[in-house]
Length: 177
Image (tube, rainbow, N blue to C red; front, top):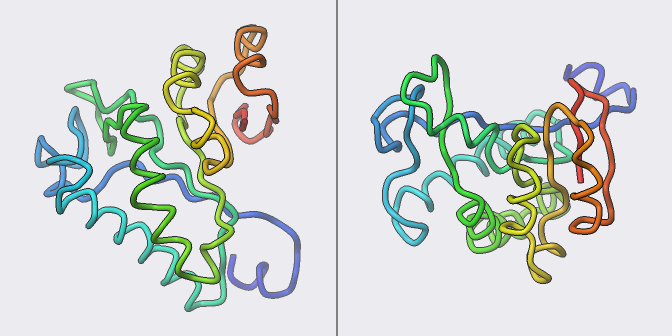
């Protein structure tokens, strides 16, 4: 990947975190149901924001920069007690506020993350229309770049009035708004 990146073959990198380290989650594990401990102003959310920033720092130190970050990969799976692999629940409101209050200010401090696109709700379509109204207000719509979902279908009629700058990305049948 690093060689391809360095020789100038065009591609964009997207990071999609599946879970924080287990010790930061309410269930103490990487898999299964659980969310970050505490509240948005507490040490776990601040540490997790720094953890994500450190990911980009390390890649940048090796000459690789990213195009986008999904705030949380498949956050709804973090409600499933026996989910078999890494997951973490993050509500729509929490995704919005985590991005606005912690990630954006932190990413604005580095030249290689200042233009990083933040993508909210990287999950399956069943929850998409409701989440659009919970994640995007006028202020958030301008600060969050996109919205991602998997398994696109006929629900687009309901979605387009909420998020008019809709784009579909063909990777694993994913839509990015």
